[in-house]
Length: 473
Image 1: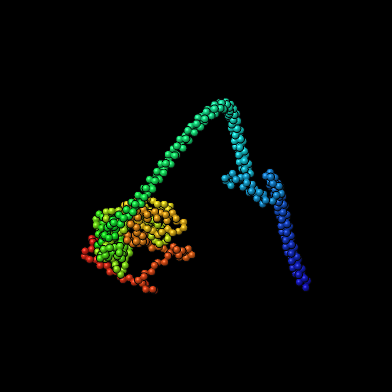
Image 2: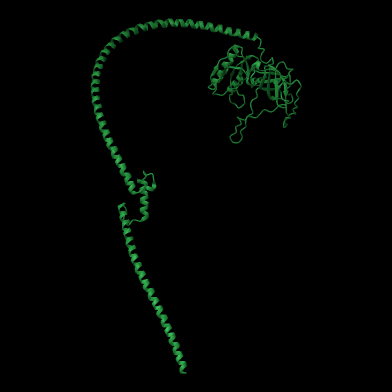
């Protein structure tokens, strides 16, 4: 029993010693950590004091700089930056490089500009001084000139007084001459009136003679036979036809003074008076092949009565070796749009080898004159609008001149038909901008029954062995 108690005491003692040692180690470690923390805290406090001092110094410097720049010591940083940006935009605009803009740079720039302004001001002051000296010299010269002018004016007044006296004398002489001239004028007036009465009597006698002569000319014109070179004799014939290509060849060419784009009307070979016959179609010369050979395209034909070899061709404008002369009057409307196409008619006549002697220009005035050599007066529509009185007078004047000179008249439609000209198709404008006056309805074919569509028979190209050389196969 005592031995067991000794073992328990020993165990308790060992545990006590072990616990004491552990407590001592823990206490030592705690004391050691606390000591190190105290040292670190002291070092950190020292650094904090140093940083706080540096921050205070920087804050003081910043406040000093703000105050030096003209801001408050406690102004907000964002407000300061905004104010600096506005100042740079206002006062530093002359500095091209935005990165180098600063208050010092702005001050240097302003100082330099101030020096330049001072230098310019000094130069201007010197220039002003020189100008003042020049002005003084000019004033002195002006005074001298004024004195000279006053002397000259006094002399001029004296001369004017002398001239007035001389003028009075001359006027008295002129009055005497005027009285003498008035007497002479009255005498000459009496003589002139006597001569005028004699001239009026002679004019009446001449007008009576002119009337008698005009009646005599009219009688003679009725007895003069019509010109045989218009539409009674064919200008040529169709040598060959290619209906497939719409091409014909005619027996006139370069030796006959033919040119491209001349148009012809085509009539049946059996017809000998084209003015009374029905036209079969029309052609336009496209190529000259020889002295008496040319190629033309068919511009108009009748499928029921096609153009054939041997048919006669006529032109109201072109004739072998001779230029026909024309005159135009009235509203020459070719394409049916209600507007005058006088210029186009002139171009067609000249293109076909004719000459236009007279026409009414765009200003409403007669250009040129009708002569005895004028072959036809082409009559357009009569200008019946209230504001076309002058054009109506030109119509009547040109008709009188044509009648007195024996010039034949022909309507514009007959002229185009006999010449073989066919107006180009016009484009019809649809929609709200369309106009019924600008797009008149086409006349219907009187030979067609109502509601029927014209039929075209197919063309079969037939080329005889005698086709002209160079024609297509």
